[in-house]
Image 1 (tube, one colour):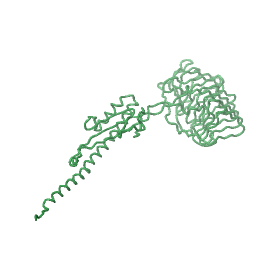
Image 2 (cartoon, helix red, strand yellow):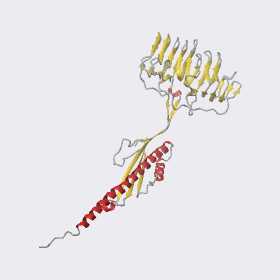
Image 3 (tube, one colour):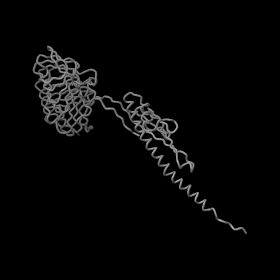
Image 4 (cartoon, helix red, strand yellow):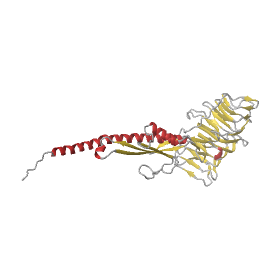
Length: 417
């Protein structure tokens, strides 16, 4: 009989143990390297997608921008160790399927595929690790939209009473836009006395953030089928994206005519009845006395901090807003201030007065009142902190949205995936 020997078995066990240790080392070292490479690739894809989205909004070469930023972060699209793809609109992603953003031109997609060579992996048959990451950014260019669309008279006060107040024998009729109170209080929209309110067909009726409005006395309210709309979403206050018109040089008088620019005294100076087209920045009082007349086509009146406005009911004012440019449709604008300390302003006129464009006084209490004051068939949108129509005023607003100011919105660049 032959005797079996077990010599050499320890060597086999040692070899197997070494291979196992190398495998564990490969998982730890090569796996860690692959994870680090994936994290770097994801960061590069995120940055490239945002940069490409910005380039798209600016009208530049979004693909070249995306590739350049990926290169600066270590992924140069060399076709060997990495490939970088920039798509607009997005296409199939790393998993080969089309995501929710595929085909949507508002989104820019960056896909990075990277290959990481292993050090210990070849011992167990793994020579490389492949990573695929993607990022998608939303790119919405700046645009413009009508302020408080659908509303001809807007009271911006976020709380408290009389954001829109129709009182006494005052009358208000609107076409093309209704009334809106931004106040959370039911007295924010207040009808009092023997006032008369009519929102005609197509105006949108009465609108409010609160659950209702207040009636004191025996006012007449007719919505002509446009109805009452309560519990509406509140508009932010103070408003965002405020216009910022500026004046260059000083406004000067030449006979009965005024040229645009900045002016610090009482405006218009004595004897002026015509305004040339342009922007007027007033730091004093814009005051129209009885029987005064003023005409201006394509003008923008800016009330600087400290500037006031007071028009007598017997004055005749015919002003129209610019028809082009960044302030198209903006007729009168006051800089934002403290509504608790801002002086009240008064707009009155007669039946021959005509105002075309948006009147935007975000921190001002605007009062339209007086005896037999008429501001008729005015193609305007009146926006103020509070709007009061009282006395025996007769205000008729035929708001044509195309004549009103459109507020610019900021571009949106957002990483969504």
